[in-house]
Amino acid sequence: MECKNILGVSFLGLTCLVGAQTALAQVALKPQAIPFESFVLIPTLNTRTVFDDNVYGLNSNEVSSFSQVISPSLSFVAQDRLNVYQLFYNLNAAGFANDSNDSYNDHKLGVSAHLEPSVRLRYDAGLTYALLHDDRGTGASSGFGLQRIINDANNDGVFDGGIGEVDKYKLASISGGVEYGAKTARGTLVANGDLNQKRYSRDSSAAARDNDTVNVLLGVRARLMPKTTFLIDYEISDTNYKGLSPDTKGTRILGGITWANTVQSTGKLRLGQGKRDVDGGKSTDKFTWDLGVVWKPVPLHTININGGAGTGDASAPYISVESTNYSVSWTYDWLDRVSTTVNYGTSEDDYTGNPLPADNRTDEATSYGVRVNYQMRRWLILNAGINSSDKDSNLSQFTNKRNVMSIGAQVSL
Image 1: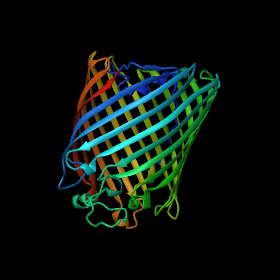
Image 2: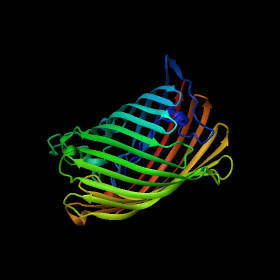
Image 3: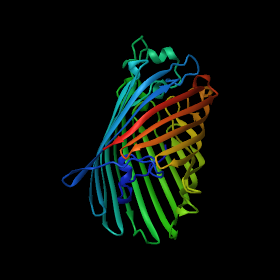
Image 4: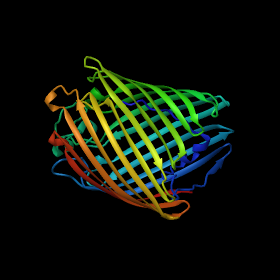
């Protein structure tokens, strides 16, 4: 499991709070905030109608369904000089036409703060509580056939014909970070960390998936040029499972660079070595890397390039997964109000640690899609898109093809 960077709400990053996913393009929501004494309220709404031709990710007897998804969010934001405080709530709810047991209501509530008491010192802190779910056909039911998904396990773990809903779980997180050094200094020190507790409501899923995870990042930043920085990061991820799965601990040390507005691009590249220990199992020591680049070769064109390789925790009955992935997307602003995005991605995942070694698996997947955004008003963006994926596995039950089409809208005041 990769260590997570804990990023607070920065003065320059307030647009992230309003869900402007296309901030690099001309098409982006420009919401009107509502003042509440020292806070402002920023409400947004995403809604879409979706058609999925393989809802459960099956390799045969595929099930298709329409669904209606609605995602409102509320953000209360206050700013005092460079200090920023936020309280937020997000709802993500979906209703499926094929089977009401596929429907879900996810809730996420949190608070965060970014503090800069001096030019050399910056703090971030956050607390989040979420009620989330695993789609049927993923998580504990990944690789199941259609009949077993429909007749999912009851809380007693016995498959006795009871209709199963989506797997639900609670996720509580506390995070914090500190950065020491002036932004114009030659060097800075950073330390981030988070503690996460995951608990499933269904006993048969909780037995192998309930866990407590601690992630830590310690880093050094050295400015080589005004907009180029050399970095060294040391990451730790320690996961303790409450049931059948063995505890794991991963460490990574990486070196790399970040750059901004250089050769029309902004990005980060890190290279290093990762080690992962499993209680009662063998250790692995692998080369690891990650890359993220936003490139604007000419006006109106934006190209995003991402990739990475590493080893992390896998869902039971597997223990480890070695993953390598690459993706690229191209956004073009045809007009002030119209943009399109084309994307392509590929990945390879090697799952190991199954009690039956012959059932260890390798998945190779590709995905591609296209999306169109039309900004009808400052506060309204209409969108439509299609995404196709093709996964090939050495275990036939994990091989599948899937097409997901959607039309929707982003709305603000």
